[in-house]
Image (cartoon, rainbow, N blue to C red; front, side, top):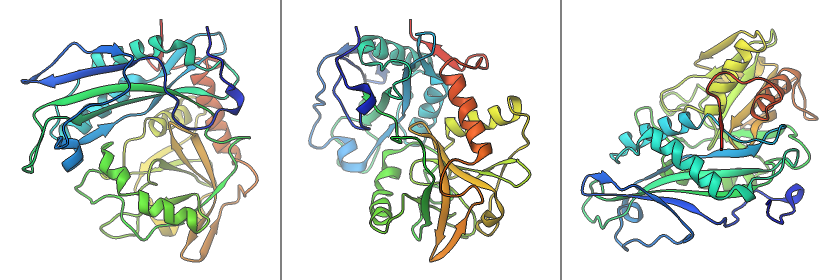
Length: 340
């Protein structure tokens, strides 16, 4: 029985749902984990996460398809990416198959919060892990908690995705051999100053360049870039300090195998961006946010696709991927996890 929520007018914020999943790591092993109604986290004032930011997270969605099924999109890739994040932060890996099962169980327990098909809303799923025992010397924690909560969210863009204006940022997002390639909470904390500053200056997002040479495009604070060349090739920036976006990898597959496009995953230099026909940001929240203009210290890079609507090739990519997610187009094997 669907909850009495005004789905079409739902914002992108937190709403407490009925159940969440909690598992604890202690004495070198994970317990079985369980679903609980308690939304409060109780930890020591000296917990590793509070002192040294030892935490990572994931983000994915559950939604209702055209034929009424509740599904998730490629949760195995979230499990794999979180395992990579844990290894890099010296945290214990939560087993990937158990991660996927915990996602399924948590969605099932909150099934009444999954918005109906056609509402534009989804059930956002947030798995995360943190060091929970007291740590005062600089070292990894010995105990950890892995949790998953859900919250219904409205569409990222009300009234459709209008092209945004972003700026080239003077700050660095990640060092060449740092943690840019994992979903560490610290990466996002470091981006907060810049995103507030960008918003104050009238921009929607920041374009971060590589820290070593400041000549190559990396990503924004929370999404990967995609570019379309004038001859219709999809180009995505390649770097060891870019988070491997699941949406970006899916779009690359869709471009090549569904739309017959040429795909290039390579280093992208800032001085070639002016030659692209279309540009966008891709991620779980919005799927694709089209970019109309990039402001490079007062010099504007304007894309031929303009400021009125998503470019034609980007739109085709968006429609195809969302069509796969919503069950209108047949998905590649293993991409859709049905919640049964």
